[in-house]
Length: 304
Ligand SMILES: Cc1cc2nc3c(=O)[nH]c(=O)nc-3n(C[C@H](O)[C@H](O)[C@H](O)COP(=O)(O)O)c2cc1C
Image (cartoon, rainbow, N blue to C red; front, top):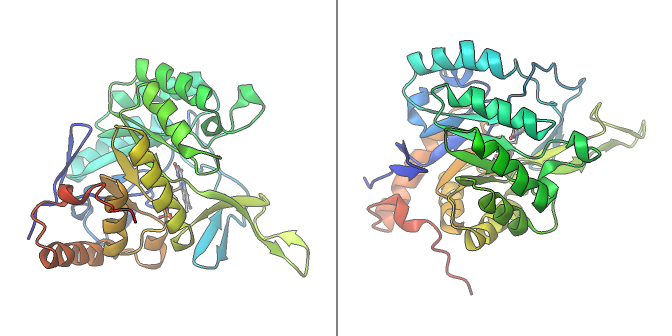
């Protein structure tokens, strides 16, 4: 069996497989299916400065090969996570925890980074798909200048590796990735969900109470692979790839495109123990191609 360990921003991961924020709760909910130690690490549900109840239901709609969600960042707030949840996770499980945070203002993001820096989290992932209150509600992640300033300000108060999670709802994702790098990001993760909508033709009403939601699952995978490939060629900081990953072959594909870590997300809703198949398939692939170290495949796509 080949070597699966990955060094991501100075943090050791026992394998390249993590989970995507919002699809894995706070980890312990999934430990009954598969011990959390099987993963390289996991991303916890997105945190906000104060607790949030999330959006009204329905918040999930099924679509061909995917789902639309508008959960609306339901979470207990960063302080509850830092004070109660994270200490318990650190005591109970031997795996890397990635905290994920969302804010309405630069100050909120910076405060959360400061609070999370005092915990045992391995990485802080900054979700920039959130509405920017100061700039008329347009998402932080759609404006390169804002992303650079946000990253720079947050990095000043962040003592953990800071990973900026990019939104795919932009014209050129490489511009945003470069802005995050210029602002001092230690890594980037991509993709977040693609904005979508589903309408009931009988009632002419959208299925989601929030009208629109984020598309995820296998349907988005080719978009995600394309973006990981483009970002890999645009920046030097390491990438966490995600978007529709549902097999070991998908993990390998994201790594060949340029990802160093790869997250499972929506696919786990149908198969909570997916990680076990994924790891077996990766080992089979490495044996078949005589790969001793998984790091050797990162960014090795050979373009036509
Ligand atoms: C129900 C649900 C909740 C999510 N919540 C968050 C979140 O809190 N923070 C975040 O950065 N991304 C969130 N995401 C996006 C995922 O982390 C991931 O980027 C996206 O779903 C693409 O991966 P997938 O197709 O494998 O699910 C959420 C996705 C889903 C489906």
